[in-house]
Length: 311
Ligand code: UDP
Ligand code: MG
Image (cartoon, rainbow, N blue to C red):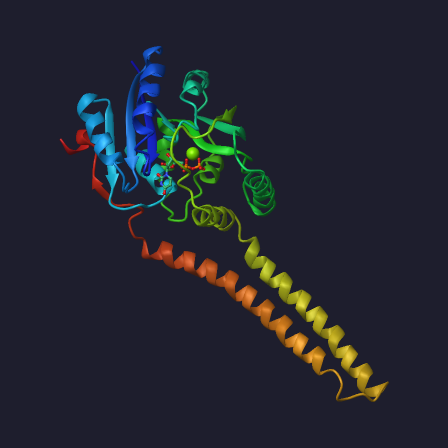
């Protein structure tokens, strides 16, 4: 029988894990596949770890990896993919926002021969209008600057054939925007749409800061357009300064008004200073990223691995 690995990053999900586990068992009870549930605990501070240990004892199909600290959803997911050895791997959130009922559909597409089955979140119940709007415009912006097409609403809920998972493991960059990376890998892909329900319990573990970092990673990992923008800004400033210089010449020789204009000078200093700092900032962002990559530190540290790997 084929084995399906289900990879689930969790961070402080004490009220969700058991419910999620039962939902997965229910789904696979009706299917002709064996499953293995690989939780990646992303440094939880609540009772999540104890609950995961209990589950492991109760059901040997549940295997958990405990990361040494909170490394973020994208790295926790990476850790799970590094270990998942099923014939196909399904990655999903542990808060029921990625409905387990969709699993049979994902598997059916896989059996049709697709190597990546991506889900697209059509809407999320109870999400604020602001989050919806920023998300839509973010993907528009991302696709304007990006070298690869990144599907709007693409969730980190997908099935990958082991072949695609093996390929993904070769990508070792630190700044990760997994949905873009997988999209750019190629392979035979298809899409399934779904409506994301509200979280089963607890609150979102994505703070606005984490969200902003992921958004910036997305743009920077798939585009060097911001750097080129620096050049455009420079050219624009050069053009403005020619106009200002003409203005000075006209003031002097036509109106003989040499002293006036301090306001223009101040405005110029502020304007060019601002532009230079902007461009420096963009450069700094890329250099910071180069620095992070060059250090080549491990992507994540495992505190305790899966029991089956440690045997
Ligand atoms: N998560 C994680 N590490 C983090 C933040 C989140 O492993 O630093 C997990 C979280 O437990 C959940 C999934 O990633 O299983 C998605 O997070 P969340 O539901 O908070 O995000 P949202 O659905 O609000 O975008
Ligand atoms: Mg969620």
